[in-house]
Length: 458
Image (tube, rainbow, N blue to C red; front, side, top):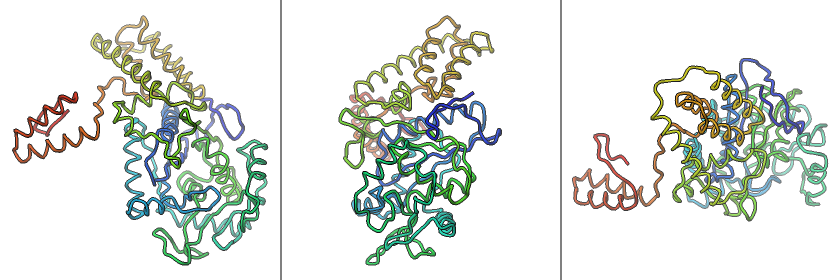
């Protein structure tokens, strides 16, 4: 029986899906204008753990969006679209920017052994659904027009701010700038933004209100309801989405349908540096490639995240990552030695059954991964036989996703990748002297290269 902390009611609750045959879950995906930093990726790791735990009992329809338009540089509906800004900086089209960073996001996502969602929905491919949702809100009297767009009137939705405590909501209202332009209320937000009259945007569409593009918040609600229905079981995201993005999602979706939008809201806490929250805008962020270049596996970072509860802030340091790396390698080494002793597969013995039950209880207790890891370590070092231990590792790793029974692929630097590419070209040109020189250079870097019928392997 899964118990999970529901931000909606600010307490841990027993999870009960609407449909006993399938859970619907929507996870806020990346805004693809830059690389994902490891703080962003901590959220996807916790969501993956949740999906794995749910799937132990019930199928899950897991959906993620890709925000490739409409996310402005300010939560106050001001500033430039993040994709358009990146386009100007990098000298590529907004479409090229979106595709490049989406691909890079999923490369990082896969390297962390996160299972891909059943549904990935790009905002730019669902504009009609967004327009229809805005039109519904307009017909019901929840919108008004300003010179720069169609806005949602939050004063007309009685439960606005239900995800937040009252003090937080009041703080948002009183802390807002005195002059908030043409908006009626400080918390009102854009549903549809008009394109500027003096220039053509790369991403813009016809609508009943004129040429423009959707607001960030309308995207998630429109796409989630298109694929998962008007009431979702679960909606996940980072804790930073509670006050604005998810609060706005609730108000617009429930105003449109008259139904509860999401039954369980689940949020992951920040990863912080010693100087504060990891931030793209401040330029203080670490990527998966940063970790690889320093010799870490992405799964070392996943292991680090498993040691802290998803609802607690996790302070990142290379010392803590070193400890996680050594711990993961020690665990894998112990398991590899046990695997050599195992003769066949274990049956469902009493000791194995009890260990599995205790492990599941830990994971179903609001994803208590630190306890689950401790139980795994205890069992591996305990009195069970080799067959039982390997069976338990397989079972536990279906939840933890650490690839404990697989050999790690060596992570290599960008310099080594370039040398490997140069060597592959040398062999193609039959320049075997150069090929051997490059092999020796790679060996000095700790990379052993083998030439096979499939090409070079390392």
